Length: 136
Length: 378
Image (cartoon, rainbow over all chains, first blue to last red; front, side, top):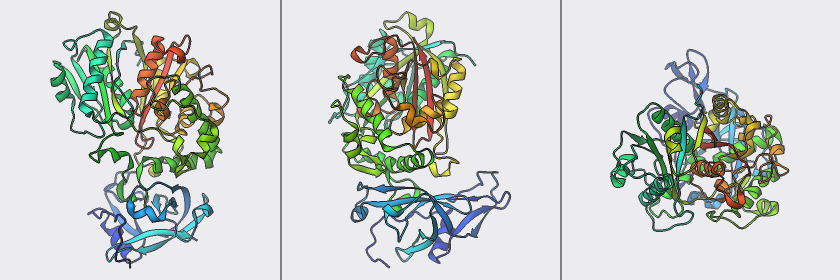
């Protein structure tokens, strides 16, 4: 636990609250549509495939592949200054949705598109565990 | 639907531009609007339509406050936010309003003070979206870089090919006295410029600027009676993929696909008929990407297409002859609309494309999220 965590924290709202509550328990969940079975990320109100509002939070594999990635050299936020240059990856989850995240345990120069990754959790505060990914 | 040149662009307004500290966004709107009216040979009493793209640094400014300042008696107006695609998209709305008889002279305007803003609003292009900030993903460049990497991976386009775009547009800017960056650059300068968000380097990224632009849309008949040669609007199209690139099926397909197809169909012509292009170039790599989606070359061949002088003056497809967003000035899609009109007026001096009759303009917003196209002829 980092007592002086200064990076931006996610904004938790009524819609994404189950995602962050699960993450806190180190569980990775997504909304799945009861009607058509598609998964969505980030959390929302209706299924963008069929417009059903019957979305159920389910535990998912936590596995995926790197879809694309970038290496940030510019200080956009002071709390990231010490990390520069750092990578942000987009992971395509086995269930379909893609998400921006961090890849831990892998130097930026070793990242490749398509590399298999799995979820891990970074406990950044008493309330927040950030889902991050590591090479699988 | 066929437009058949029923409407025309007949007045262009510029302002001082680039790094212009101490000027309000409102004053840039006023200067640009006034200059467009003078350029057309009209007076403020003629203007009965006003559409503005809201200013990123001064979102409180609206069309009706400006109309009051300028002494317009509006019959049509409002603020239209289509992000970076607003320039072409606002012209679409102006054409529809003029064609429907809602107004006779529709003024369209934009201003930005992002270069010199001191209120903090100028960092708009660097903010995070959603909860991506938790992972350190901020700013427009980082989101575009995600697409650039994927483009390189899927089609083998190279950073050197990105450089061809940057070097060519800078050469064009060196011929443009209004351009913010006029010192020519080499492929090596491009490659060695500092990485901002890899794979994008500094010279892959557009400028940040202060200034304003305005133009007037009216009927073809009215335009023929005005001071400047009319530039007819013959094709219009839009295409808007999801805002968040990661939620699109393909990162390497842009809104230009639908936008261009609709515009070419309306104009009844194809890419081979275009004499001069103004392609939205917030980042170097989105130029070849749009050429592919617009049908100038096959998918994945944009890198080869832009090489060998094709997009330079004297090439097959001279593009962004003012220097574009990369080297002239960053005033979103208004840089392209204005340069295309000037090319068709034959008003571009040393950077004139001789005999240019038909121009294509694109403007694009968000992270290739909104897209609008115009086809113009003299």
